[in-house]
Amino acid sequence: RSGELTRLRHSTTQPNTLSDNSVFTILHLHDGDKLIGTATGLDRVPGGSFEVMRVALPAELASAGQPLRVRTLVETADGMVWVGTDAGLFWLDPGPGETVAHQEVLPAESGLAVTRLLTTSDGSLWIGSQRGLTRRWPSGRLSAYRFAAEGRWPVRALIEDTAGRVSMVIEVNDALAAGDAPVAARLIPRVWRQLVASGERERLLRWVELLPQPVLDPRL
Image (cartoon, rainbow, N blue to C red; front, side):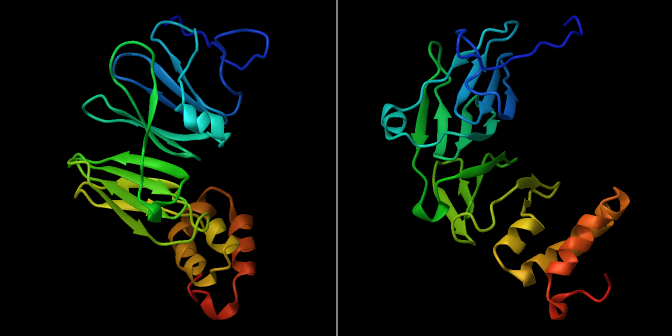
């Protein structure tokens, strides 16, 4: 409110600090609270306060020692908060009291690591993962659309246009790392103007050098 910046960080000696200093996502809730996803967990900061509270994990997940890097957060119109992590998808109980994360079981085709979340105008929740997309319909039904092996083409972003169509973003680097030159060659023309305009011509040239000549677009 005063325009001053306040730093929140992890401390091994002080209570009520961030779970980790590597922050991946921040969500401002409708009630004024903030959720902060880090490399090792999820924290909640009440509105008007700088006291950090840890969000409890399901006991079976914590005991299994699975990674819980929180990659993405979204709040739906009904106040439900969804949490995408390396260990799956969770939802938070919107009721008063301690904030507890409950696991949402996704289809096996979806994979485990959730990379992006998007709520759309029809009330659906779209879940981007390391394998593809999953749609959670307003009724709670789940539909999985798998397009890659685990970790091959992670969904980097989800976008809804004015017509209600959902597009996903995968990166050229992911396609190249997977050894899929044809996919990389289709992606490059979509971003080359932006790279040149932003002074990243060298990155574009590195990508082109990694592609076999037959798959190159002659217009590049």
